[in-house]
Image (cartoon, rainbow, N blue to C red):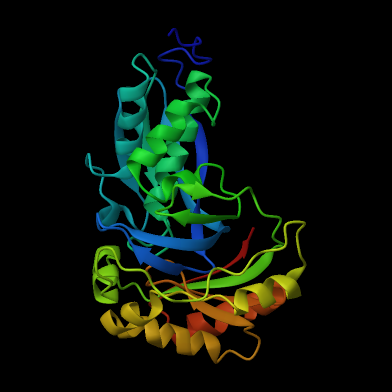
Amino acid sequence: MSLPPSPYSAGAGRLLVERAPAKVNLSLHIIGRRADGYHLLESLVAFAGCGDRLSLDPGRPLGLTVSGPGAEAAGAGPDNLVLRAANHLMARRPGLVAGHFHLDKRLPVAAGLGGGSSDAAAALRLMARLNGLDRNDPAILAAAAATGADVPVCLDGRARVMAGIGERLSPPLALPPLFAVLVNPRVPLATADVFRRLGLPPGAMRDAAPQPATPAGGCDGSEALAVLARARNDLEPPAKALSPAVAEALILMRDLPECRLARMSGSGATVFGLFDDCRAATRARRLLAAARPTWWVRATVLR
């Protein structure tokens, strides 16, 4: 199968740039565990206004450099999900034009914000733009799934429910803007350790309430909060057991007078709080930053 000509010639030197927004698990219900060890889940996912920045220089060989506060933790080696995504795509479409990636790593690493997965999705979007591929091209979708369970939901960065092991995605959801504060105590928390502490044996299913349905036609902020209040994050208890800082972050967030809902995102250690408007979120950010000046704290909008 022949590929369409690239809209960029090698050596043109024009940088392509994509944002890699933070992924926030507004809920995370663990349904069970397959016999092969993979956990089954249902999760309502939204994307934040803050995140990383990834650029691609088509005039240079395939490679990766990383800068920013999270550069050292993210690393620029072959295990970085940006390079893994690019290599998975090129393996499925020989002859694709690549280039040199540069990642401005702003999100904390191992934080439950899907930073690496969002970076990988941004790499695939950049490769699609460079080579004139549609984002829904089968090779793009297959490369996303091969790179990591969270990469497919990050491809277009819209709110969805993800299920199974992450491969089943609902249509995009019409969530209202949710005004949030994200706080990370700068304590990395490995996903594998949190799932191990959950202690669900292979082949087991959990008897727990399912993910509540989000209105298909959209909802306002109060309705969204009512839906989220009936949800939960099943990884909060094991995460708090492994990292007391997660428990501390949740207590601090829930004690804020204007916080409507506080919960951990993903496998932690980031905690989010939801507020009525951007002014309340800004006030909360200031209070948290003053109380814990060494922590990573951001006010943002989830969409």
